[in-house]
Image (cartoon, rainbow, N blue to C red; front, side, top):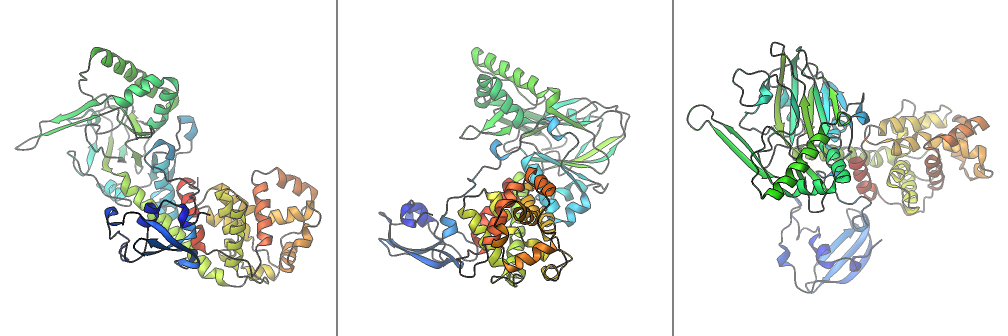
Amino acid sequence: MPNPASLPALWLRDNCGCADCRDPRNGQKLFQITDLPDGLAVATETRLADAADGAPGWEVVWAPDGHRSSYAESWLAPQRQPERDRRAEDAKTLWQAADLAGALPSAAWTDYRNDPAVRLRILDAVGRLGFAVLREVPLREGQVTEVAETFGFVRETNYGRIFEVRVEQNPNNLAFTGERITPHTDNPYRDPVPTLQLLHCLVNSAEGGDSGLVDGFAAAALLREQDPGAFEVLTRTPVPFGFSDSGSGSGGGTELTAHRPLIGTDPRGRVREIRFNNRSIGTLRLPAADTDAFYTAYRGFARLLLRPELQLDFRLAPGDCLIFDNTRLLHARTAFASSGGRHLQGCYADLDGLFSTTDVLRREALDQLAALFAEQGSAEYFGEEVTQAQHMLQAGALAEAAGAPAELVAATLLHDLGHFHGEATGHDLMRGTDNRHSHTGADWLAQWFGPAVTEPVRLHVAAKRYLCAVEPGYFELLSPASVHTLAVQGGPMTPAEAEEFAAGRHGADAVRLRRWDEAAKDPQAPTPDFGHFRPLLAALLETHPPV
């Protein structure tokens, strides 16, 4: 655990959270970096039990100006998950069609609206996989904007707040015909481009008109692997994109242009954006050798994007609303008969609003967990000398001190939450009724966390039964209360049960959790508060969403 004097002084002082440095109403800084004195250094540092927000940490007195700052120990600790650009490829799950066959990320509109956990799962899928589908969305004109407004704001363009995807008599875009449309991104001639697109199916009775999606980041990664030279050309060559529409009446026309590479990368070379639209690409004017190199790379990438194994094909039904990342996924459709009925309504939105919404949903989930620890967790722990919250916090601290993976630390911290949610309580367990709190807790946590967290929780009672069956002397380590509940929960496993448990995928983690569980009942042990674990849980909620 670093002490303040070992950290960069300007960075540490720039992050002082006192009321002289940050407005307590909104957390914004009240000083400029140039306001800090020259020769800034830590004059003294004092270890405190409640440095910030009641958590242990440090008080620092600064030289040469004598300013005082407090820092929570958990804030100073190295972060388990490095900060990531959520728009870049390493924050995504790249896929090919077979990876998602029969498993499109989807949810019913009513569930999405009413359940924050479902809403987080769907919006996380858009951020992580690039898309999600909402089913049974009301068949109302303009409903697509109501979907967008559940997570952000509609991005109005020259096509209007809503655009109609159907056959038009005088189309200004091939999208408004029955022609086949190959994989492309929308509006590459804008800078910035709309980062999200929504398509709400109102009618789809025409023959043809099936939809397709291609993960452009996965395709770019393949190109980088198979032809690094072509990848490099497409990341460094600005391409002219344009759109022109004469419109009608005074000032009714549109002229849009942007010069951007087909594959956009960040300063670290990570793929961050795809712009690919053969209908909107303009005339490239470069020296002949550069033009040849570009067109060779362009054709290679285009052929790669048309590989059948990369395109996920599906058909939108009336009431389906597709939400997808327009800077990552290329979308396509098959041709359809002009006489058939096919009508989608679309709108654009932006990823910043979606990411803001998911962050708020995660914050609310963590607030809910914190409330459980502060309220129900303050109750007795069924015959032990610690409260339920102290027990779980101690267990999580033991897992953390042992260097356990973040998912297992979280599982250990949260392993007994099922006592708060089942129909049978912990008191019922002590009276002889198994409340199956391990399963109840795992099922409840699954709305926020993936299997690496939930399954050790589900198995932690079974792990006690397993250890009592296979490890001599383990039974003697149990507290009287744990001995009592062992009998209620089924007693030591049979040899066949133990063999099956040991072969399970999450059995080893459940055994580790169980050992910390038994050790975390010391009323004298130093116990961190829930805030200590909050950054770890927040990182898991972002990087390991439930399936």
